[in-house]
Image (cartoon, rainbow, N blue to C red; front, side):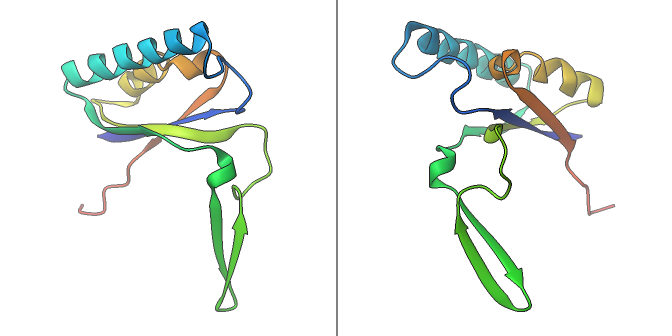
Length: 117
């Protein structure tokens, strides 16, 4: 079953770009990428640009409403994702715990709905 692992954190939490700690974290992400690819569970994964680049679209009464920024006002924002093909939720949880941002943010796991059944 495929699971979407969504990576949330406050943009000012965790190691900041340009620091040694940030470079270490990038190495940890590369190790995680390698592990999921070697284990055959990796489907996709990408970091997202800053929430300052977000655009939210709503349609109300047939009219588009476009606003800058994320949909919700919150400290934690979606910063990236992994799509993994795991045997079960327990396996997805085990991988989520290995994502470096889990140490200061959170990882939301959602199963992908299978509409072909």
